[in-house]
Every structure is written in structure tokens, then in C-alpha cells.
Length: 312
Image 1: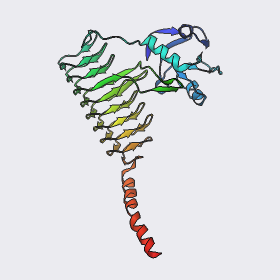
Image 2: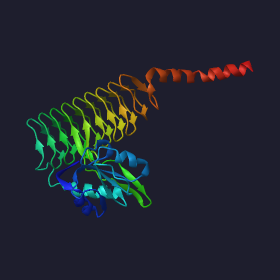
Image 3: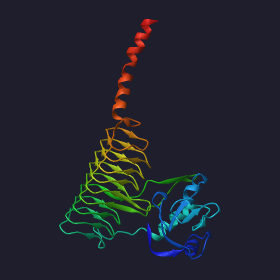
Image 4: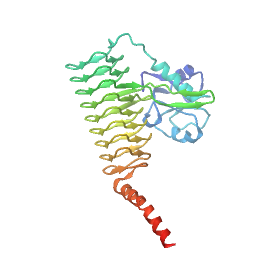
């Protein structure tokens, strides 16, 4: 998430009431999670295990809960609770804006696009040309839809990321300040749910087709011309490359990559990154042929056990 204008390190430290390390005029251009940071961004880290990753990332301002050696060309914001203060920044730069109409006045809807009765179009939503938005679709604020997109009834685009910190008092929610981008010629079935990014975009690439009742988590990037069948659940921060096929009821864990033209059979569980141009099946998912050989071998176990008993 980039800010509408540049701020200084000192300004941000005053906003958070925290100490800083670096030039007071050090430029702060935005804030992002570690997998999407660029120069000028703030990234937060609150566990020693991830200090080096944050300090060595592309981010140039690190919101951290311990004073450490500041890398050359970067700056630190020292906070007793970086998670809390990252939320403060999201609230300040991307506050919730109450809706005042079923279709917001600030929404931009392209030529020949049809919005059926009961659809909610939030603030600053942009919809391209020749789209069909069916009844009871919900597009939260700032969602961007390309041209020739169809979204079927009851789907929700832009709900918050499922991201919590476990504290003694209960689960503390990380606020979502990102959005969703849907490119051209995408079809989204009924009752799908796509979460917005924490600070960046959840992205659906051009030509991708999504069946009914699919969930896509925050900051996930789905490539071009993918096919995703019903009841698939995809966690946050997943990268699905172009022309991947995922059949029904597949579950995908967070933070992994599924390679170009991979095919995932129904009811598989994806627990690690998978290479492209291969077919996969099972839980945990593995090469299709290998998995079926394993199943065939398992079916032979009773026969082998019976034979061993007779030999005894």
C-alpha cells in the first residue's frame, strides 16, 4: 500500500509515539507485508526468528520491537508492539469509509456493464466495460474489475484477511488495507469469497475461470487462464502460476507456489510448493502416478499379511 504522499521517518514516529533510528527526513512512501515490500515501504517484525529476513528485505523502514544495528540505507522504528503499530498505520492511512448507497457515487462502472438488483458496489470500486455483476454480489471498497468479467450471485470480493495474532487476551486482528484486482475475461461463480490483501492486492489473472463456492485468501496471486473447480480453499499469500487446473475440494496451504500448467486432482491437500507441468493427487499431494502406485500397494497389504500367516 503506497501512501497518497511521501512522509518522513520523524512524522511516522510521531504518529506512533515511538523512537526511530535514522535521518529524521528519511522518506516513507508506503507500508507492506514482507513478500511485497519495495523501497520506501515500512515492514513490521516482532519475532527474533524473522529479524534478518525483515532487515534484509527490500523494505527500507523496519518497524521492530528491539533496537538492532540499522542496515546502511535503511531506518528503524522501535516499537514495544509492532503488530499494534502496523494496525495504527493501516487505520490512519486506510480508514473504514461508511457506505451511503447500494452503489457508491464514487464507483466507476464501464460502458455496457450490467449490475443486477441487490448488488452492492462500494466506495471507489472500478468496473470495466461489458461486465455482468449478478444479484447480491458484494464488491467492497477499492476493488478493481477489468473488462468482460462475470461475477455470479452472492459472491463477495474484498472481505478482510484471515490474519490474527494470538495474545493472552484473545486473538488480535491484523487490519486489512489492501484490495482486489480482477483482470479481463475472468468468470467468478456463485457464492465465492475472495479476501483483500493486508496491504497489497489479491489478484486474479486474465482469462481465469472460477467455479461456485471457492475461497481465495488474502494476497494470493492467481495467474492467467487458470481453472478452479468448486469448493476449493486457497489460503493467503499463495502464488498460482498461469494455466493451472485445480479440481474440486482441493485445499491449499499458505505461502506456497503452484507452477505453470500443474493439474491438481480433486480432494488433494497441497502442503508444499509444486512444480509446473505435472499432475498431482492425494494428501499430501504428490505425483499422480506415484500416488496411485502407493494406493495399489496399500491395497495389497491384507493379501500379503494373509500369505505370511499361512507360511507361519
